[in-house]
Amino acid sequence: MGRQSGRGQDSGKNPRKNLGKRKLAGMAVFVAAFFLSAALLGKGCFLLADKCISAISVFAKGTDNGGPGQLSQAADAGNPGNLFLTNDQAAPAGLVAIDAGHGGEDDGCYRDGVSEAKVNLELAKGLSGKLQEMGFETVMLREDDESLPSLEERVKMAQDAGADIFVSIHQNAYDGNEPGVSGIETWYCGNLADSGRLAGLVHKGAVEKTGAVDRGTQETDELYVVRYASMPSCLIETAFLSDGAERQAITSQAYQDRLVEGMAQGIQAYFGAK
Ligand SMILES: [Zn+2]
Image 1 (cartoon, rainbow, N blue to C red):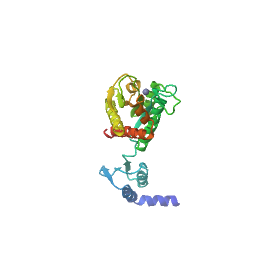
Image 2 (image 1 turned 90 degrees about the vertical axis):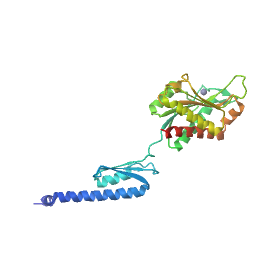
Image 3 (image 1 turned 45 degrees about the vertical axis):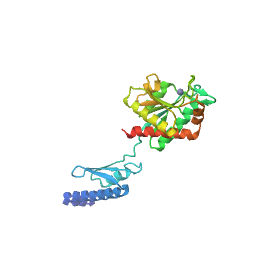
Image 4 (image 1 turned 135 degrees about the vertical axis):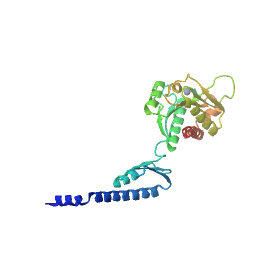
């Protein structure tokens, strides 16, 4: 008969042997790919799951976000089993909803030409950029000075985005007779256990980096965004616009940078301790 039957006879001669060869070849490619990949990855921790090497998990630190592509492609080529690469730096560290308080026709507190809404947005943008540098994802609940989302919309936006935490930025003002009222205070609602921890860490970072007066953290159920956010949340009031020195400081880039750095470190500590 033709070629077809010849090939059929060949394969019929010793199917077990051929299968064994294919398996062996596959295994060889797989093992080579595995060690090559291991060499490329540098240090790592390799776990063999199952006696016949049906699965290998590779945990590598310090690799980039390239994901499992290279290793799993190599495994697919030989295909004697499944190869999984998990990289603990591949996933974002967390998604942070950043709420620049007020906006639009609502200036918040306004003193001597300084608008709270504008300062809030500058700080929110700074914090968003800083967190992204650190590997976090962010969602800005207000992105310009013209828009004024309602408090309900802000809470919903954070929830729809799947944010892990909610940080609202505001400025303070004092109109009483006591002199020198200034500093940072941070609010949270006690309905979610982690909100107090988040508030404490963000507050501590901000106070430490700026040297501002520490007015502490306080619990409240009267601030809408922290009360109704479905994720741990806090509201930080980073300066008193009624205090001349603090009003001047909060509009300077250098002071804003320190403040942003402190808040970002607090957020990193929050996620780090989980
Ligand atoms: Zn405000």
